[in-house]
Image (cartoon, rainbow, N blue to C red; front, side, top):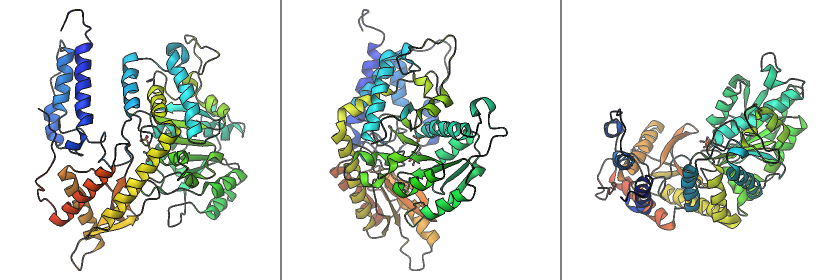
Length: 486
Ligand SMILES: *Cc1c(COP(=O)(O)O)cnc(C)c1O
């Protein structure tokens, strides 16, 4: 290395090479981990040195030592949880975000970052067909989007009853009732806990066979105590089935009773971007707040969720802060007025880049393609001998299970067979699927969320699952994938 070269060049160019090796070799890499807990600890637990190390050595050893512990979520054969890939422009922008090292708390400490968020927020509302006057926040994920939206809801509902929750706290405040189906995501409950609303105040409402709230049951619940403040959680894309609540029926009922309607659309809200699927979210734009993710279906790298609030005054009142040492530019949007964080990553850059790369049609195309692949994977795997289709995808989420062939097999045997088959598929390295318990039965989730999943991936994965089923558990297919690193 030349003396005149910066100390950054060697570690960063090494990182670039390694990143490309990882991203361009996904077809040859295992979709799951190949190292176990003990091995990873052995590889990574090093003595912390007194005097530090050369940066190039640190990065080289990091790449070496994580071997076997990096899942294939950057590739096209990863169908666990709801995990998106990363678009090239978004990933590159994310690297620059780290290099630029802006503190995106407010305009004065990251001017371009603040403007990029302003622009990205407006684009997001446009793509998701949300009201243009809604305020927004770019947060770490849907978890904090729920938190942000519910903080605004708490403020608005209590302010209407003469209660200043930011000053008085919840001691002695009128309890806020919360209604949702029992299928709500755990992140919503955590937001309820963190905001002091108390999970005891959540009422489970009955759902139909598709997991959607009954309008009649909602009306009845709200009528039972009409003057009490209430939040109604609706679902745009259930995590197991991708099911959508009937927004155009439910939201008017909630609003008749002055309830605040919050929508969990972590991935499902993106249906709004597609002319083919937007009927699923009909009426969703009349809600009061919406939470979704960039790091799932928009394929932005991790650390990216979005909160939107119709009542921007309540949103701001619940979070804004002024301190004497902060300088505010009165014409600019300071992120800390809308975000729960103070110092924070300039996470607007990757979102801005992702939306610029895709354009409106690109977002729609990615949504449609993921749905098509999820449907193909689920129905083709569901038709294999020994498999059963449990949930045909409405969007990009499907469910299958695997049946114990013995004639007197019980539900527990089918559950065991399902978990064993998922493990057998994982051990081939050909695909990554997760399990779930759905309506009392074990199931394999098929979640397609990456721009990288192709027709060839679908073909390859169906064949791999078929082989796992015929060969039974534990047999070596002979073509197990390992990571081809030196
Ligand atoms: C993933 C998910 C969440 C949580 O999102 P994070 O970004 O992980 O915080 C909430 N709701 C649903 C339906 C999800 O799929």
